[in-house]
Image (cartoon, rainbow, N blue to C red; front, side, top):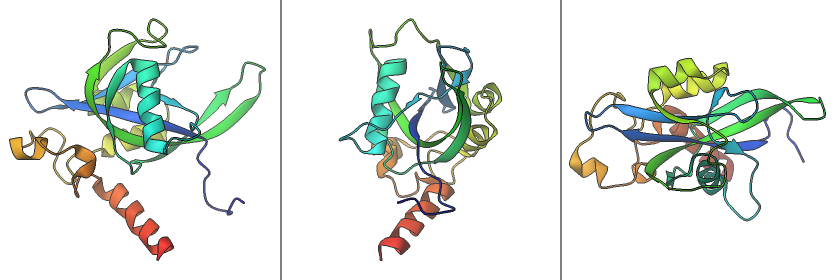
Length: 183
């Protein structure tokens, strides 16, 4: 049963990121198949997988990348999708930060989309959806640390999603809400 005022999650997405040798955070965007707009890898929830693992699967299928997604969503955005039959629907997408590991030689949608690494600011400028733009601009993989700062070797030894401060303000607020609802 749907609770009024609570957005349903229609799709899940990954926000793949990595740090360059100079410490600058880069975000991977892909083009949509039909309109060639810059988007994040996204898709429908997958039965039997948690949302963050489904986001990892979408990142592989659409961009050929592997990595570790945070089990806590960075946030949500809405977008309007036009179906092939002409119907227009609004979807809510939960976005999971995903620490990049590698890109495979081959993947299911290779050749159907372009993949490109952007700085955080460039990625925000490239996407059309205002809520997604805000999520990207607010993304801080190391909690309060600015995205342009290089992490320490000790910090890099622990996956991002396992670091207590890796969730950022939005993630910590979501954890608090979940804890309050569960308790």
